[in-house]
Image (cartoon, rainbow, N blue to C red; front, side, top):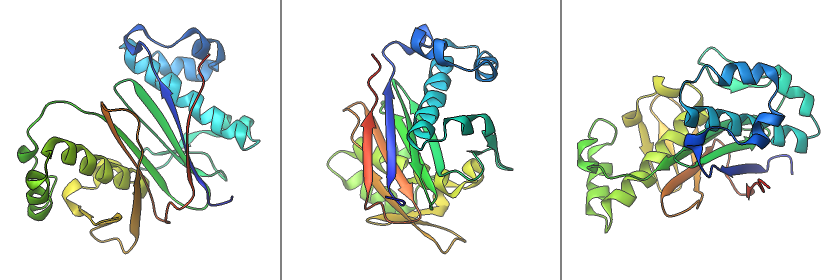
Amino acid sequence: METEAKVWLWHLEQPHEGPSERLLEWMPQAFMRQMLQYKKLDDQARFAAGRYLLFHALREAGQPEALQELTTDAFGRSFIPNMPDFNISHSGNWVGLAWRPSARIGLDIELKRALDPSAFTKQFSPSEMQAMLASPNPLEAFFKNWTRKEAAMKAEGRGMRIALHSIRLAKHGARIDGDERFWYYRPITIDEGHACHVCSDNPLTNLSVWKLNQA
């Protein structure tokens, strides 16, 4: 369907060892040069997996050669002219790519870790903070809401120029101060150690999630 949203996921077995042989064999030289600018092997692995996911999406769309047109806008957000919107996210052992024709889309993956949710008063409104701290598991609620906000921020496109406290969460979506659009989000279950949400400015009625076979 033209409006279908898709998310592809890639699990990195040992990101600290760098990109797999499969990724290195596939990678175009232009991407190889960009990847080597990262000093840490885990950052190289995530970069390589993200670019491969984009290639996979383009190949499914019958436009693999469009990968050569990959560029960034004035806010540093990656895009390919005349192609569907997409967004890449990674955290911990997972890398994901969200893809959608005819709408904006954002994806956020976060590795769950020990922290104090009450310390994030600059990112959440008093009512949002109160609801999180009153929940049965405040840490789970924190990562659920954090990925919702980050996904909306990434879908809108200005990235970190949008303050997280200006993103107002509702039951099924969010509004950003100064923006009339409603940003719809959906959770994606990856594993117990990661939180993930996808967000778009059109309802995510048709959403498919795929984990690539890395064999």
